[in-house]
Length: 297
Image (cartoon, rainbow, N blue to C red):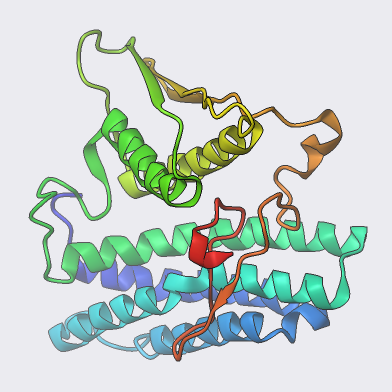
């Protein structure tokens, strides 16, 4: 809330974070042995082990010790930064496993179940880390003074959608030298004539529409390549009394019925295999299931 208490957050997180970290670590340990042995998954596992150990160091610290609370905030920020590349690194581990051992239906189902839970767990842990670090890290973003941590009480839905489109458009222009236009329609039933505003985490909405725009753009460009005429992507946004709906449609050829079941399978992608970027810090991989940047081919 706007009256956030660092002491209360400290007492909550030092109990809650170890539980969440330990739960997902247990699930990681139950993955197929060959997947666990991939360098990328081992790296992810080591991040979780280190983060759990660092949080447990505060288990018996006094909540009245301002030094301990300040140190805890620094630790939370360090953990948050350490886990920045969890998603691409885990995706790289799946790629390594798939290329070395192939995928049978049982393993695919088990990995699918794990990754669904793993990424949902990461969202919740990330939210807790972000809220504490943004509220008590001592840095306020002057561009968003009314944000409560990562939450915007008046999130401009259409503005975020346009930002996601522009980012995807930049990638598309780089790769295909052109891109589809955006046709956006708004319907505010809750407050007719007013801008659409909801209480939400803008970064979450941005990430979702950005990924959808990339998929839509790639399909549109490749399906209409022979004609060199690229139909626009249509987005219809409706704000009702109880919910917000964002509908995106394109002329990218659709998906055959026989492939519908594969759409949300982590092992399936129609995109080219991304090239791994190596560095001293982490093995980065261009985002899984994406429109690839030229240098990522």
